[in-house]
Amino acid sequence: MISINVEDKFKLVTDFWKPRLIGELNGQLVKLAKLKGSFVWHSHENEDELFYVHQGTLYMEFRDKTEVVEAGNIIIVPKGVEHNPYTIDDEEVWVMLFEPAETLHTGTVEHERTHNNQEWI
Amino acid sequence: MISINVEDKFKLVTDFWKPRLIGELNGQLVKLAKLKGSFVWHSHENEDELFYVHQGTLYMEFRDKTEVVEAGNIIIVPKGVEHNPYTIDDEEVWVMLFEPAETLHTGTVEHERTHNNQEWI
Image (tube, rainbow over all chains, first blue to last red; front, top):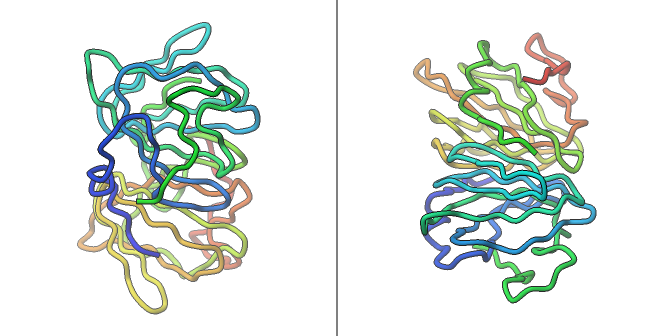
């Protein structure tokens, strides 16, 4: 029951594409991540995933369209839907994620960017 | 899979203490509410509840302390813990909530401010 300073927590994230944990409730985790460049196509079989854009502009690529998510906005990616988050113009994009604790970082895909052993900050 | 503009959604909330729904994932709801003044002491028997302060300063009163939650910060109230959110100096405080779909607004308490029939915006 302590206030979590999101901006301060972001200062502890010094790399890209590695989510850190800042909260847990009802079996869901709250995570922070910094993104730059393109990630990897993947889907989560059983988990919906929420992205809240704290800073920058996130591009969420789906197989049939790309959705632009500006700072302060949210996108929810339903379970089973393939997606690939990316950023443009070398911009650093900071996101807060909400997803079930059992969510695998890149779903069924194994990639050099896969990072499932996520740490608390 | 559409970007949700949180600021625009807040413009649709024109009253206080009545959460509106803006998203759903994994059985959890994402809600927006505007708060002013003091709410009502209550707890949620089985649900943890997350408050993200979008604007203003939220005061979260517990039986043994009050936690100050500034804009951009988060507080998670665990299930079973009595709490009473309030604001001071007539300030309008805008919050985004994240909680299970079955969460009752004021838990086991019935109050004139209880508002369980929450609408989508």
